[in-house]
Length: 344
Image 1: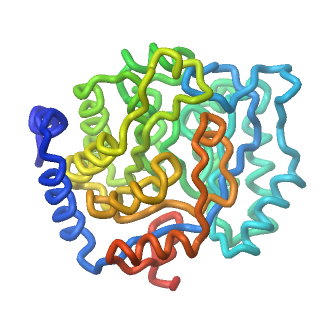
Image 2 (image 1 turned 60 degrees about the horizontal axis):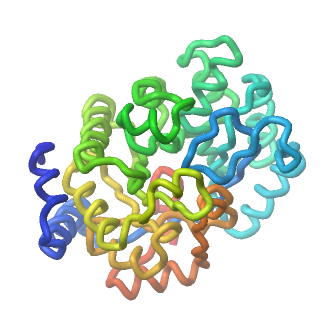
């Protein structure tokens, strides 16, 4: 098991190829069949109203803003219908932290979706959203997550993690949930039998030590619960954000590959690590499959948050399949829980 000092030493090393080879060996150990997976799903952002004003976000609008919205049920069902027609199996639904949407609004939404599309997996609501739902509804976390689950929520995405270190969070997302509150949502969800993912947004001015601290928190949760299906790192997109004015340089492709590889080595108890094309582009994503990644994520029928910050990469299903094949792997469509046995 890799220690924090060992991981810090790797971050400081210039041996990018050696780190990549070690991560590739770890991937082969966990995934000897030579398969790389992807999913067809859709990101639906049900509202862009938000009270948190995170400095890395260009998507949110303050309450009352003329560009703000809360999608109606018809709009959301229409987006899901289109997703199903395109072969989609799930929906990733997230939004801003809205002060007026209590748990009943979310329960009604989930039940309506499951009533019309019982086969669609609902991977929804990040830790900050769930903490906000609990707060505005006057409920504890266990009650909140249990009620959402009973209404149709299937799993919880890892969004809102950014860097799990309060010094960083105080600087870039002062009003959003702190590290322990992010952890608490995932611990409660896992104890209720729900699976979640873990994410990391790096390159926002954090230190190497803070990055490794993030890895350690994720690994400890997994040791305790086994509830994470995947770890998904991506780099901060600075172009249209206020934080981008102080963080002058985005993480490079080399930095991305090194971080991806070290995450694969450090998080040896998490089965899947995703190589991102949305923030990195298709070519770096492809190289990432030899730096520990065994999944390329979604074809992204719709994505609004990262693109608002300046990312403009796009990919069709066939482009992702070709990317995977050309890297020497067998492409397979998966579902949200990384199951491929019933798919191509």
